[in-house]
Image (cartoon, rainbow, N blue to C red; front, side):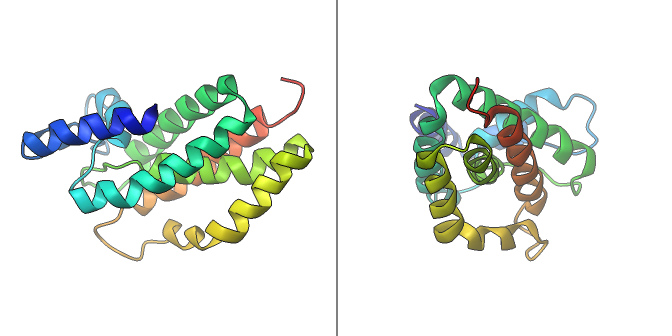
Length: 170
């Protein structure tokens, strides 16, 4: 569902010549909330969108293995906490893209599976770590055109969400 929503926004953003991207996160701006909420759904190009949509779809399906309620709690938490931290500590550029949410799901999947102590969820954690562990390099400031801040704060907020909602008793 989130993939379909982001795809619809991408179509509108593409048709409008990327005019929606002004609603991204602008650190230290006067009114950050629109950017914090909108940024994960906006992309700078078709290739930016394409590079995010497949891992987002995969990670969304894996997070859903923890249950629909936890999926929504974790998603909202990751979007809001990542956005606030990027707004507070990010470089003074417009930050857009689903990668903060993707990194948040990555952090959630690693931590929540281990915290859950359920075989299926631990297996997912180990597989995500094995197949996607290289993502960890994305939290480093290696390119001026990539929001490593979104990656870093997404992974951290996802790990915190994993601690909060990873327990079996919820």
